[in-house]
Amino acid sequence: MNSNFRTRLINGDVLIGTLITIPSGEISEIISALGFDWLFVETEHTALNTQGAQLILQAAGDRCPCVVRIPANEQVWIKKSLDIGAAGIIAPQVNSAQEAEGIVRMCKYPPQGCRGVGVGRAHKYGLGFMEYMEKANDEVAVILQAENANAVKNISEIVQVPGVDAVLIGPYDLSASLGKMGQLADAEVQDAMAAIVASCKNAGVRLGIYADTAESALTYIKQGFTLIAVSSDGLHMAQSAKLVLTALKGALDI
Picture (cartoon, rainbow, N blue to C red):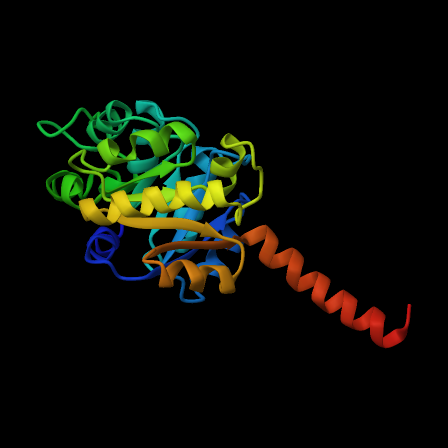
């Protein structure tokens, strides 16, 4: 666990990250050495399991904090992700204050919460057990996703839940829930995002979002977003390969 991540998040530092979707320690090692502020380890929509996620965290080492998006908002996924050393969790599809309260509790050890006590990579396999236990409640970041029309309806209550560090908008799921799949510039989608932004700012909760490109990331940063996930490992690789191939085929006229 990188203890500096939550501090920087709460302080409002702009944190630029990217998604890790491929179960490869080598890819994580390469990307973590480039200077990203954090890595978004995607276990919700990919083949990555806890073992694969741990490999990614081990490859990133202390160079770059990793935050795991869990596949479901259940205690087993939260404790597994934190026990392997994640700097925090991203909880998908959080649509009510009650759900938010439950997630915060599952991220915190007693008496603040109900996180189970185990020994894993985060605890240095037992050698750093007490040190981790004493700091974890203050150092683990709790990031909730607002990506549904119901979340928009309840956002003012969600952001008032103690222990919520940031809300990360899922623009594509949000647009889909409004019947406007991928239409991020649509007025209804923009209004929904604006409502989330306003509630977070009023509550002092940090704002995060996924951005397709550097250009869209800059636009979001100007709007007050500080936790940015730009593109993904697979897209970085595919776009770079396509650029080289297109240039060569164009030069050779084939």
